[in-house]
Image (cartoon, rainbow, N blue to C red; front, side, top):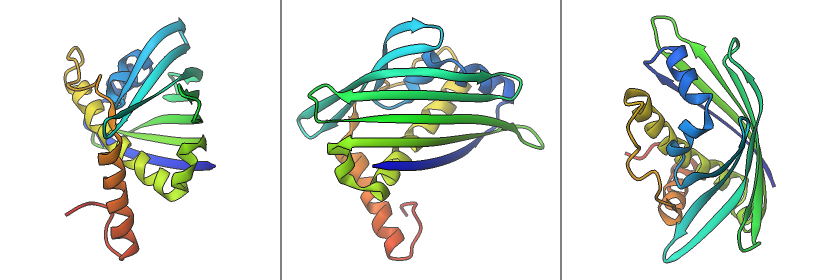
Length: 188
């Protein structure tokens, strides 16, 4: 099942400050809930893992991410990633383009467009639910990313903790229900 996901957020830091953080996956990985780099293959290829905890059960996905395109002048980053459930129950691939835009009056707009293809257990959720789940995870990412921008040398608290699957899915389900009832995606 293939899903296209587009997310945007704005920060007060300059485009140069944001690019310095975003263009190095070793800096960004701590902002992604449950993610870690296991091995640096070369300056553009990284092996990593992401952990998801659902109740007492912990699932880990291992894979590889490659920087396909990195254009500092355009503030453009393209990534290609693939991962497999270590138990062989599914996997995912992703192509992501990240771009930065300087805002009038200061600050930076960050846009990420992802094409995600999932198979196995993950595909059972359906496209809309996967989009909602990714939205919840992206929100956590942006909060951590902004924290890292403000304190570049600081470790992100809880960065090594697995994604809490039930919490993420229940937030996403709540968003889906609110939207179906004609309300906002944001909880009140």
